[in-house]
Amino acid sequence: MKKILFLGGAPTQIPPLKYAREQGYYVITCDYLPENPGHKLADEYHNVSTTDKEAVLKLAEQLKIDGIVAYASDPAAPTAAYVAEKMGLPGNPYKSVEILARKDLFRAFLAENGFNVPRSQSFYTLDEAKAWLDEIGVPAFIKPVDSSGSKGVTNLKNKDHLAEAFQHALQFSREKKVVVEEAIVRSGHQVAGDGFIVDGELVFRCWADENFDDLCNGLVPIGQSFPTSHPKEWLDIAHAESQRLLTLLGMKTGALNFDFLFDQDGKFYFLELGPRNGGCQIPEVIRYSTGVDLIKYTVDAAIGLDCSSLSMTPSKGYWSSYMLHSLQDGVFKEVYLSDRAKKYIVEQDIYVKPGDKVFKFTGSHHTLGTMILQYSTLEEMMDMLDHMENDIRVITE
Image (cartoon, rainbow, N blue to C red; front, side, top):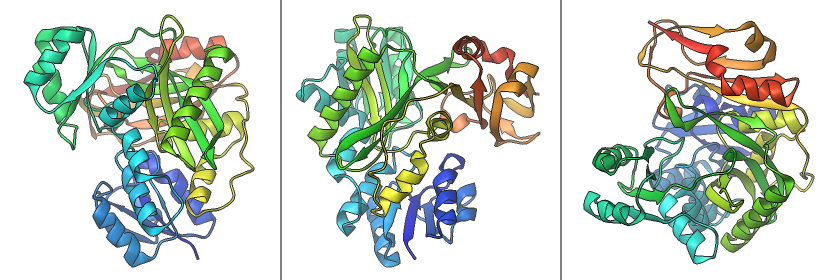
């Protein structure tokens, strides 16, 4: 029986655990949160931090695992690559995964290799950050070099607030290092979505428009809408640049999570290329819209199964994910759903119950539940996503 070690057991990490159990594999989970629901699906759970690569390697060697998976987790992705490299398991080069997972290393690599990149520097001290901000001006993004889910990010519009934004970013950085980056004025929506590499080739990708809620935090995605609204010729450029980057890094196998934009001149900019599956229900929506199950391929690839059947498949219909969230701190009472919302929802999973304390949505860690919705037309989808507060609301008291 194949043994697979999964790094994490959070609600968003349950899908690959379920698939592995269905296939009859021996499932092992680890993280430092024993109450995470995914651990209930495991044959074994170990209280080991997913970012402690030496401790995870020791555990993996003791258990004689056949594969390791860091699903929807940027912090755990380098650990998975490190363990796979040390044990000769399927995976990607550790140094390359580390570059993709660290915003400072990623920006430097892009610049060194001729990609379009915003002016960006990373700092341990506020004084250095101030000097750089004086050079690039505002607006600027202040963010941790190593967080995920938009945690610790500020869209700085006033230089006088740098100290506050810098300290906020530090709270979410394990490296205690902060990126100060010029803001690129984008054309249309920011783009998100997932892809998959087989033998070094980007054989599949499915991209969506990223949606935000300006009522609480305009930086944290509340969902993705498929398909993306950008023209094919722009997406072809994005694909070519993605393949160039993957080739330079020597990436070989597995899932990818994209975040990129086009500026007002149509120039392509990477924001992130995560060496793992996306959160926000992205793989699940892709499965609905294309029939391609990236959850299955992720687990299969981790134990070296043949994934050559995977190929580009267009998105059909109009689909979106939605991250249920509160606009304010309070005590959860209920979720209001309009008749229109009830008609569109095909899946929902609410994490909270009446009486639970909830917080204003400032990062993915404040997500209260997830939904997948299907629409009849593009117009219906865009109208609802632009005014979602009229159809889906968290009621607090």
